[in-house]
Image 1: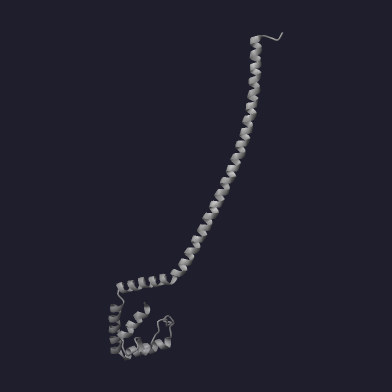
Image 2: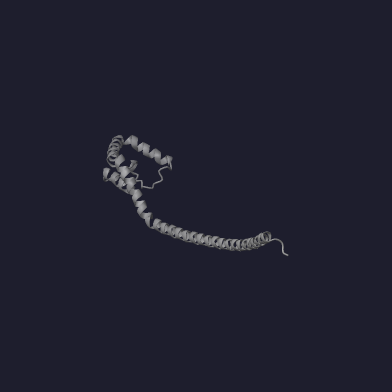
Length: 163
């Protein structure tokens, strides 16, 4: 991680601060805040200590090439992603269980709703069948009456009018 790289920089500059002018910057130092007075002092120190600046630059270059290769940075990124995954895994499990419970409840509610609709449709179908049966009985009775009338007419035609 990041702290390891700072350790490597410190190892590259043993016994002294690894930044210019004896200033030691912590990992979260406000590097973007410009202090012109301090900057002037640091620039003046660089001019006065040219050989030290070159030495520091060479050791920094060696430390950067040794400690900050693409492969090492990629490994550090993958390691950090794995650390983050491990940190959030318990929370993800909680969310996953809650989601499964919600899905189970939704499935149960859907099943109950389907069963309710099926019962309603079956009851509706039963009522329609009863109505159809009643109509068919009524039609059957009417057919029987017509049939009886036709038989009586045929009998009348064959036997002749009543005397």
